[in-house]
Image (cartoon, rainbow, N blue to C red):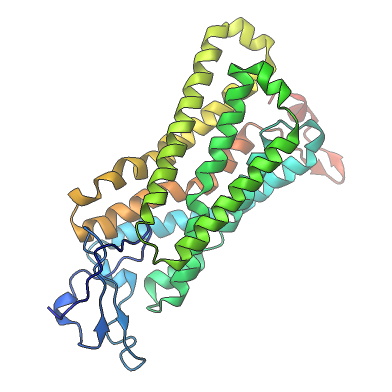
Length: 331
């Protein structure tokens, strides 16, 4: 193997571009190496333009032994683009139309829909990067998008916490019902999101992947705790009392939506990434990596679809409502 420069303290963030793990014995002397971490992921950069492209391979070529996983991942990403974008735009339209009758958590739902719409724009660039491109310039853009999506559980945690306060601590919730508090909270989450995405875009911060681990585990724990506490409170109220309290009934529906997102979308990365060292290098980078993030990313479509499924969507025909009976029914 060619001589390599080792930097033991450097580790890549999650969602690093998967690289060829079998070409290390045939690399040219003009390549520069970095030893990353225990997963033994090698990132090579050409020393000059003459070697650029000579030793580069596309992500699809590097993971050619498991192409079905890449196809699965790209399928989910394009579902995000064709379903997630219109669904999130519909959510934003409904929130704007029903602004006078909005709930306290709608501000977090709005910002989450904006974030998901932004993330759903990347599939064409990601397809080109995986199948055709070998340049690292597109990877900086993708890492920024990935950083934005990685932070989406923070807004979901805010929704869960808002519902938790409404059900478990109604007196405090009433005192804090002023929407300015939630606007400040949403602003803080956006600052954290953009700072995290910018840092991930740089890509050379030591131990940066631990930030994602802490964030996803913390958000996961917060959401699970809030949802279980809400379900416990609603169970104590009894069916008759639940019918008499539409606010709690609406909170119960939101709990089911959040639980579905947590279990289906966020449990795979939480369950798999802590055990990265137990998988072989190529299996983790070409298989586990894309499966876990595929389930996490599809939440950009599932979340707005589940939200729309419980909302009254007005239909208009020639300027007049054409589904008045449906709209007049319960949500």
